[in-house]
Image 1 (tube, rainbow, N blue to C red):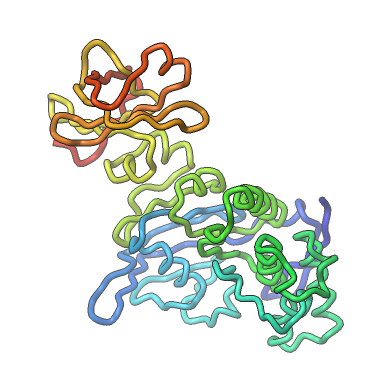
Image 2: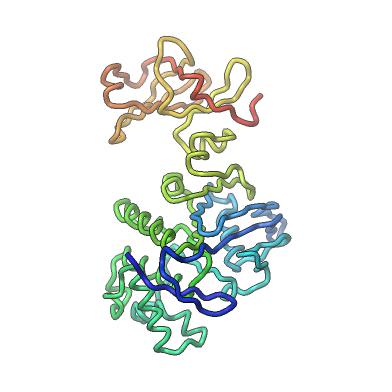
Length: 348
């Protein structure tokens, strides 16, 4: 799909065409700390660089600092110390409307009394843009998300997925260098979630701006991101490509949070991770007892308990389980190839 878009920057408005757009949205957090009243530290000396025109997922459990990091970038929170740069300009102290960012909220927050067109044009109206100009730009944004034919409808006449597209158009109509997404898919059913996920990635590639997406879903981060930032207790636990984060976790926390891994303490004291789909039943090895067998659609997941009560999983194909059936209560041994062992930091 080819579309016409305009990028507003400090020097004016420049018309461009989709894929030819220069990448924007280079972000840097430099020693950023956010301390709330009472002393609670939500973000702790964060150093993070985000390449222009990339899709970044901030991933982690509740309370890890990912949403506060997004709000600091948006200007809805202010750092206690440190600097935040967007395309080489320090944006600390600037109000949200002057930062070159736009946020798409989980709730969509559409005005029920305004049409789709006026919802999208609302932020331009608040900036004093004339009616004809703001409606023209709102139509452009709606065409981008394939919702222009719904411009006269009210939000209550739209499905959840359509409302989300309108919310996306409203965020994009101000031509931000960075789009901020706070758990944007959590309210959608699994089928629609997959479709919208693909659309978000397509929009990001075509616009060539940075998307910074907060999620607690490992699958979402792996599917969408160019760069995953896994956070824990206000700090970065690990960052890298989805493949690096999943296949080469550095710590036991990373291995366990990303899922699909077993963490073992070996006889020599080493702490290691082995992917569940690379862990096998064998004649000898780590002893365990089967506690559950679940069909996953692409195979089976077998849950096991070790001698000390620790939990392990094995991902098996249908053929492998049928060749060697197991049931709860069965004793088994686990083994794996040395090449599939990933040493973890923090071991004995």
